[in-house]
Length: 306
Image (tube, rainbow, N blue to C red; front, side, top):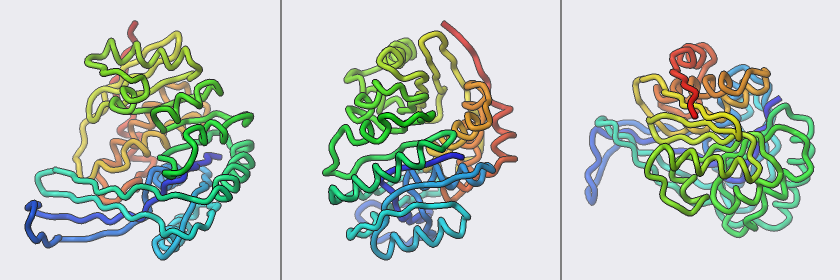
């Protein structure tokens, strides 16, 4: 079972325009709505990849009820913690040129009782999961070490898609894989990383701090993977781009699926890249399928280097 957990779900609006004129009235050619945010994208993608999946998150208000209905329709087992504040609404603006603009509402504050409830339910599910994916930002009032508190003393394989001080707090608990992007890696280590060598050195510094594997994405460019003993470079295949939002979440879901199937890490990453590539061609995030993901995974170019 793959367990996706996080505290920053979103009800997502996707607007398509021929072109967006800043400072003018813009009329969308189409509008779509869907459950999204990193934790929901991971859960949906993992389910569509054929994995038994459950998720834990918070919901509130009309937007939260819309999320719950969609997740139920997907056949995903969900544990919801109800909060008073409506679940945030985020907007993706797509232009025919391929430009993508993301308008993100931050996750609001929650009561301490919500964090306590989350911790209790999290530890129950994580203790029986094959792989746990803990992802997304914390509520603005949550302690920075909250995720470290969640994973402490839970014997499972963790994928962490978080950043900064919150990530470094988790490293002493030996997460199986962490997956910041390049910008998030720079934030976490507190330094600019101008080239691949600097990135690898920074990644392996996180390995030395406790992460068993570190994976870093850099937009459409190559993906790097390190452990203390190995360094790998992955070149993703090309694909038509409809909406790039959610690709990192599909990457996490595909890797989790590979780990759950006991694939070698390199093959699990290839499956994740395949799922992320398949996501590029979808209007709604995380609507991937195993056939397309496996096809793209076979096209990934892999190189080990030192």
